[in-house]
Image 1 (cartoon, rainbow, N blue to C red):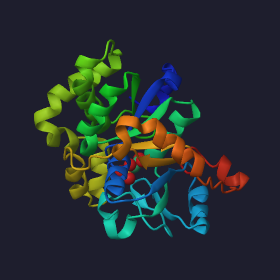
Image 2: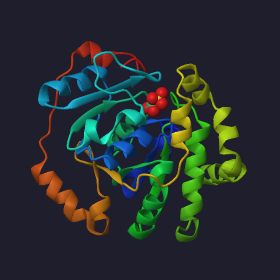
Image 3: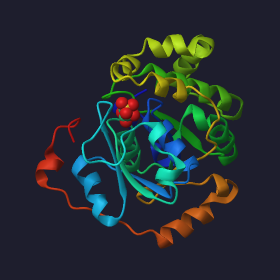
Image 4: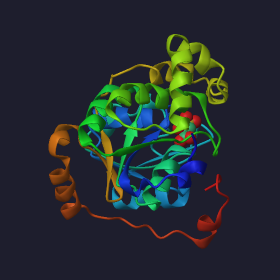
Length: 266
Ligand code: 3SL
């Protein structure tokens, strides 16, 4: 329901699906479908900006708005093939990248990115792995959000016949999805983040985020970056090893001030 609850689960034995429907994980799926090579999720603004000196494009969002001096914000419409194909992008967002980092810091067995746009591809892949799965909603500043919970319920529904046990939180999400399924627009429109995005004139982005199966990718954390494993999904472990052997890790040094900055201001 929220990254604040992640310590309720032992994710070291689970594939964690990070969910930030509005908009980080939706946008990541678009970027990978449009050919981005890799995306490095980063917690701090200053750290993300430092990737620029290493040949990366940089994407930064806080409270829905693009950060000054960054190449991208968090709009799925900006990540066109012309802008991203073959490129490396470092990205920091208010909640989505934070949720990815939270799973990484707890040594999740694997971390993948979920959105309505890749739901069926992801569900089929998860079913074939025969592993525990944890659906991690990014929420908003540690609070539950309707759109992430509805998506978690939609994914849980697809996984239901293939898994043994579901946490109550998962059943809550599935129940919410059942109520919302045919009225997603109504639910989304009443959500707090919708109101935030509408204020920024981003209603088209909300509609876009509700579309299913438009980007059949599986972004997975390998080392410090996300890569699309969909072309290697049946034997992705070999691909992971290949990436790990060739990956160049960039580790920008950030000032103590940036490290100590408030949780949401970073
Ligand atoms: O919180 C996040 O990571 C973002 O997805 C929020 S926003 O949709 O860009 O406002």
